[in-house]
Length: 326
Ligand code: MTE
Image 1: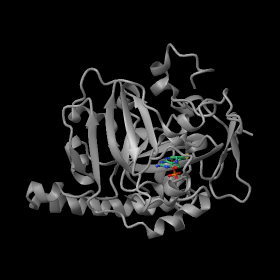
Image 2: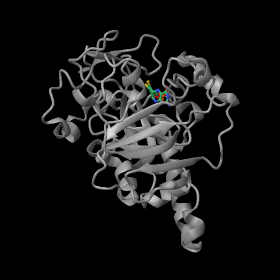
Image 3: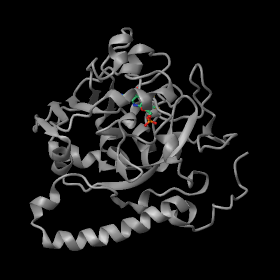
Image 4: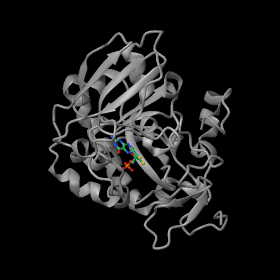
């Protein structure tokens, strides 16, 4: 069951390049490109260099995975099996439905609520404002529906952005909102029982945890529309529905915000939504997960508490009954 038997690509002490051959070549090209870029940057004035987001970004080695999670999900699977309810309830249908959406090159993210820097930013400006450089991190990604992927995201720690935005001391939660334009997402007009726009929220401590990132890319490129372009949240110890896509607003609040799923079905979706193999969803057992790696017969593996990130996040929930407040 649990793969103690090593697969040919799982080598003790192997580097990412060793275990994912496809990626190896990309990384070699990346090395050449980065060396060239560094030389070019030295010759350019700083302003020109700081403009725009460039891919691929430097890999942050701290977030490489090993063992059962060493193999990346193939890019074409992660970018064609999607949950993006604004477009389609059918996971295989999202990619084609986003085709008609022309991404606004001047996409704005509004910063609102209990925060000093209350204003709208273009995506590049928001990332630059954080002071952080884009980096690549490989995270486990676990959906409450019982499947999982391993994805290389490109982004910045949300904590860097929050620090620069200067929330007030009364801010206890961070709320995120997706666009609510019916002309973009056909289901926003069509599925009227859903409390659109899609909203999600974290406690301030969760938002400041070093694992929480704002992603603008995946697989060494800008995010495809179906995965939440131009920017999304990624919270790897929580079920995937917390990782809200295509963000237009970030708001700091004192009260716990309402979120789309916990408003729609409070008995099924908790606010915390931490991955927990001991608490089943009414429709899906959470004890184990189907690894979506493209195999004809996908393997399963036992699900880990906090999706394997227990060391990094368990302290956030010290006083909580994890059977109730999962
Ligand atoms: N964000 C928005 N705006 N709309 C959605 O329907 N689905 C969530 C999350 N973020 C969703 C969303 C769910 S249920 C999951 S599992 C992940 O996005 C899926 O992300 P992926 O398509 O990149 O795998």
